[in-house]
Amino acid sequence: MIPRDKYNVKRLSIPIDEPFAYFTINYRHYKHRICPSQGGQVKAVSAVANSAPVWILAKSNVDFSGPASLKGKRIAVGLAPGTSNTLLLRLLQQNHLDPKKDVKIQEVQNGSELGPVLAGQADVAVAYEPQVDQGVGQGLKVIYDFTKDYPQYAFSTINTSEKLIQDNPDLVRRFVGSINESLAFIRLHPDIAKQVARKEFGSLDGKLVDAAVQRMIDSNVYPANTRISPEALATAINIQKFVGNITGDMPYEKVVDPQFAAQQ
Image 1 (cartoon, helix red, strand yellow):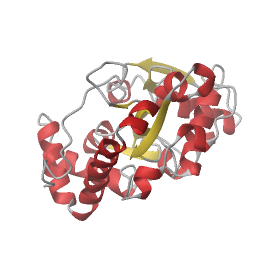
Image 2: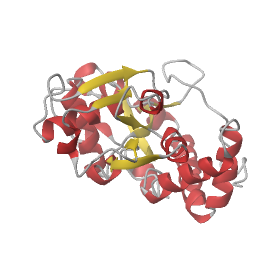
Image 3: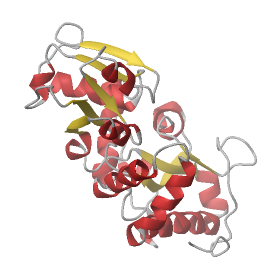
Image 4: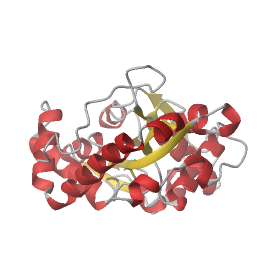
């Protein structure tokens, strides 16, 4: 594992407006803390999760040849305005399907999307990992992969205040450096990453946890490094515009400070 004291970065808490916390990770900060029109004084300094880690599952007997096949289906998905819900609505719109007329959406608590499908109350489920591979382990099949639609998507980032960047850039550099090494470590040593995940999700079958981690690696949900590309940010902003959280433009240089990731 990476030595804890190499970067001398202590475990930090959120949110960043508390005096004891320097960094935050939360997609909602794009609106409330990064967006200039919302008075944001925060910059994204590191990627954490890239691409859209959302998949659609169904029982093996469900006919699916593409998004148009969702017409008439009962769809279980997490509560709005969660990302899985948003991506589903966007997919429907892009394929000229009315979410109120052409499908029946059943919103459920995040993490319980598989239940309605397994109980026969829904035809498909929109889910994250590890629920995806839990479903596969129970006989469901993955019929749609949103990571292929959004290969570059700043799904979550490390954010910090402009004040900290100005007052203590070395701390930010060390923190981003530790994230960068962690991301590289996942790819270089996936077996150890899976061991860590098994401990985190100790109540789940270890083989399913391994499969979930591998799927996240293969889908580039765990990025190769901490760099936030302009394409990844643009995708994230466009998703927020679709929801209605953001209305104006958010130039890359106003949202991201790339200097620390570039140093890695």
